[in-house]
Image (cartoon, rainbow, N blue to C red; front, side, top):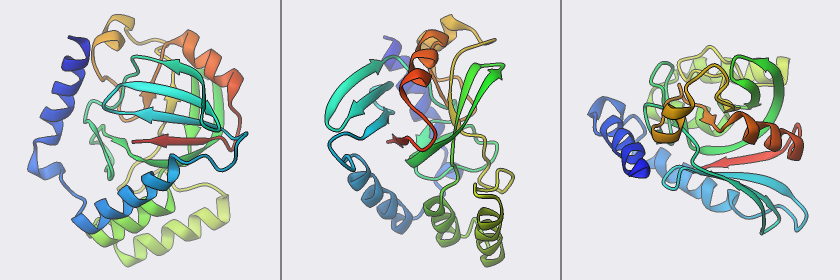
Length: 203
């Protein structure tokens, strides 16, 4: 029943034609990326897979499952290849952990390098980014070493605990503004397993 509730919210969010922003070419780009992303880089690689349909987060060492957390909560706006600021959707993609905030209101916040260059390219192809936006994105990335967080694509995407949120809601619905949420105990455990640079795949 809980999974049905989660999926129902996702389907309701995705049913709006205003949210179907990525054209087929962009969708194909993301599909191609994700098909490669789920292959470990080497036998000993520790990496994370978040699966929307299963509402599940798995930690792998190569192809071997290390730990699994479920259910996880994703964005109230569903999960899809392309998101925009304020739509509360979780972006699909291949990311890297680039920061830890252990004083977050969500207990621990594990930041991801969203929007990635792939998301920027998709935004350009979809007309969400202008050529100037696209150029500015890479200029910012080169200067700072991480992507801008205040463009039309939004930012501040990561994995976090429930913290000041409601654990009962977490167990039943997707409730975040686009992040991936696990329980506080789970985010502590996850933080002990991964590090800066760990690959995270959301699909």
